[in-house]
Image (cartoon, rainbow, N blue to C red; front, side, top):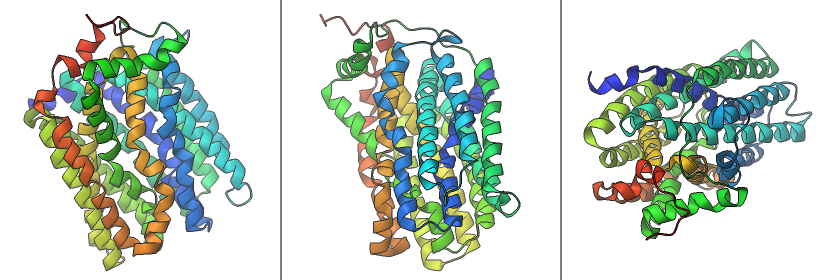
Length: 427
């Protein structure tokens, strides 16, 4: 009970809403869009290629320096940008509802790219906001609550989209999602604005190099290399699997869309809720390094359950077990992973640093996602999920190194970095 007390603050409730706002657009350009295109009869190769629609999530660090350097004339340095991107998402998602994937494929892709860009930009500021506002002892719990809100949005978008396909059109579904995004604006208005830190970029040019120079000087070249490699590889297997997971459930395991909505999304929410609560308390009690390794092993093993489902065929017991364990493990792993990323970011330039790290983490899905169909053609669905499980091994090895207790300290703490003006030469 003492470990769970950290979840009881008002801040955690608002983080849940902000997490919901962050998670809502993701499925609309990935898995829900997969289901829409699968329902419309689009070939596997074209569906897999749509992984490139979300390339903005990988490239968001390119414009993140602008969000560190400039503040809009309302709501503060972080919330002003957040609400601007949320309004843009309401408009863009509403526009997607007016399009047909068969009659207007190019225009639908263009608008989906716009949604992904606005969503990735919102994520840049929301990630920076979380890193700025959460105290060290709140990070794992705050990340867990944020992820729970994020996953709740994914359950809502996935469940409503897949369960309602038998009753309403895809256009009506996307209009509903636009309305839910509009409701999230209230959470942004109620959230506290973090204090403006010292050492912020003083010019546009400085905002381009200062985040990297600050990280290099504070962590040192060896640790920077380890952090970047760990970030890119820790969740690579899971992200690669996501490129075709819905298509597998429909075409490989032969489930109906309504069945996927009822089981995949509902049990996924239960697993995420339980996993988030467990992660927040276990990290605080047993330490971040140990939990990164344990949670990473659990994440990798859950892909083996999908490989088993590919062998057994349409089996509800195997499907339910895979979904529950998968989401439980991923919620744990994501909470610990995000807490680690927060710990290496400086509040002065957290938008750019966090964007760089999270962009690296999505490489497995964004850049290599289009290759998923080729892997399935070569080794079938069961082999595909075995490959995704094997991709987790390098990240686990790096987790044992990068989060060692002796790696902590003033050089790797964002709090210490916030007090240092890295533009001055070292003594």
